[in-house]
Length: 446
Image: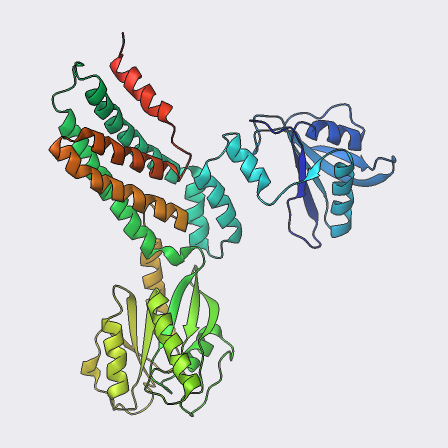
């Protein structure tokens, strides 16, 4: 599906650098390059040093040109890359000359869109390309590289193949009842349904555990006022981001910053001290603190070693108990002072002083982050992918009952819906695929 028009865009980031890349894709890409370089030919996939001229014949720059002949290019069309000297002026001058030659400025994402339409990438790879550009951690890059390599595509294709098998046999049984079918066919279908259900459930659970991998896991620091939350934030960031004061209620809003822990990027949220408050502004801050706890992947809860456990601490402990399956790190702060806090109130806690070192906490954080990222489980990297799998799983669960009761039309409906939803992750499902399986496997109408 080659497009009629030719597009151009600067592929490198704005600013001054040693090299700038201008990418051209379309039917006229080669002709434009020959016109601007005064070359008679450019060899496929061979870097060629060329002088680049404007349409008036004046030399602009010396650049490396690489020609990728269709269909063996990223977009599946003829693609030319001008690798010129870096700088805003030079790259813009060359791009403007390309526009004068008949190309048009590419829309955002249009190169990847053409690659998808021409069958060079599927939607999983397109999303991986977009995300890998924005990736902020090594773990995110590794995960997205797997998706670029086709790991999610293969996962989806395996499920599609099983669903097509079920749908094809069901349609044959409905429309061609006289055909000889394997005696255990419905047992095979039931086994495949159970297998797919487990795979999709495991994938959803793993993906939800690792939702923060691309943008950074969210870590909320909570505790009553003056327990040392802002001091901990400043220590983690290694600069004074939050105001530190002995006055209770100094932090009245959530403060969010990003920091690297090992190979991971996390978003640290310092919250207002959680307590009963009369001040309206402080109350709003406390409500935001509770919301931050709900949204966090990991909760760091601070308690004051130098003070007795009071009602405010008990409320924090209750909040932790009701936080679901979140990772929780309990920290008994101010360990350099006399112990007054009842340590039996805490389990698996860390003792430290934010005035000294927080290395034990950092190591604990790194262990938790590693456990959530270093896994061979399939991971979905977008809300779109997660919703597609949830809907697929919904229809597979709905299909189980009509299969048992022999209502094959209803079973086929839900399997078809499951196929449509799982296929949305990579490429749309077409009914011809099921027909190919039907007629190819059963030789119907022979």
